[in-house]
Length: 362
Image (cartoon, rainbow, N blue to C red; front, side, top):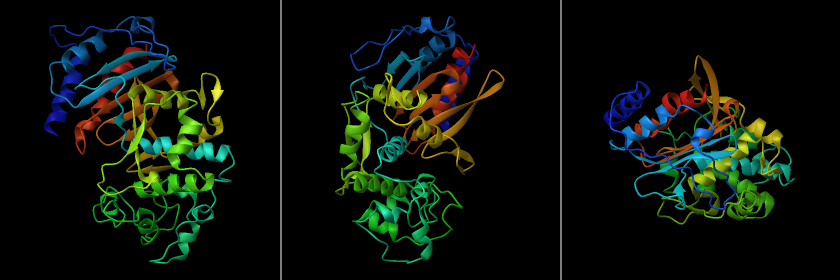
């Protein structure tokens, strides 16, 4: 917490233009033939004082940021890496993978592999059925309940007493069976608690419905159309992990493509990858988790900008992995970091609020 306070003071110092020697030299991002067009920062904004001051101050401080990228008006205009990270090094996305899985569910619906989001999960999950804590309410759990984290199961990653807390489940041999056997605490659809295991069930449903492992499905229907190839799937667990349980490792440039896909309502370079209807539905608030608006695995996070509120459609991951999409400003921001299990991973929000948004919201 002490380091977080120091870093936020750093950002506030920048916003008040504290004095300091300039060391930051801006460079227009390179065009690498990966589908991104780049543009100089000054082509989008005349006053870059806040950005320059911020990166100057950041260079003097200890921090756990690994990258900061900004896309404005379809062009990559800021791209900075730290701590040895580079443009071609995939980063562990942690729970940002959840939001990408939401896109995969939408594609599965668009392609007809899944009929309806309100279908019960038992219609598609044929490999496992509940064997313990049998409860008629389990038959009511739908795909939508998984996506809004409102299954009613005793699954809450932010409660160490929860039987479905992710670190407990990672020690089990069969994550899917264990999750289905959790006790029911609530009627499905009534209470939302952050539950990683429910999203693993979602990935397995897409796999079983399509007849393809989730990595193969993602490659064919999402990553190939987005010209994303430098990825891998993995996990920090030392056990053998089923494909649906693995997390994505992706470069920040490719994370920005995911954000741009959301911003462009499902299109990349003029081609539809996922339907506009799904993008609208999945990124619109459906419930609240810890008081924050939540769609289908996408957060709706408000920011104050020049006396008004703008909403960021945000994917988040432990350690500081963020894709922030602000449609009102035609902007996508990407952050990666190594502040795992630390409040320092919230630094990105201060940077957005006090540096990036004031610079571009003129």
